[in-house]
Length: 105
Image (cartoon, rainbow, N blue to C red; front, top):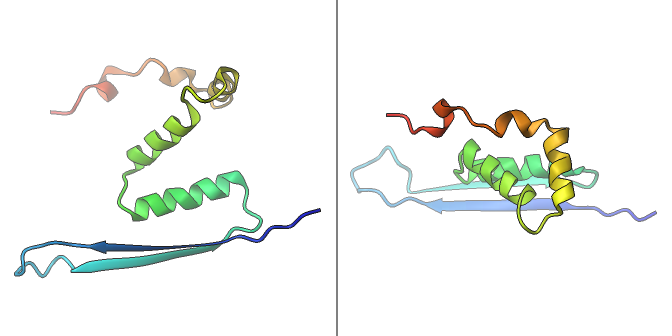
């Protein structure tokens, strides 16, 4: 049996460019995410990266869009994608409601 140990550390550094008199915006922000992911399953890995993407300023909708593009694309087996559609009962979302599709005024 092989055991692998993983420790993930990501440092996020963002510089803000604002007008000098605007004291409400800091000049920079730094954040560090560390996680021991030795025994993490795939769901825990994706949750960790979801949190990192949120920290980097991505919206929940953008993160979901990225996950769907990862799961459903021309490089995946059609049968695997169909299995996911059945497993997560995505059929109900196949016909979007007009309220979701139309931009809000």
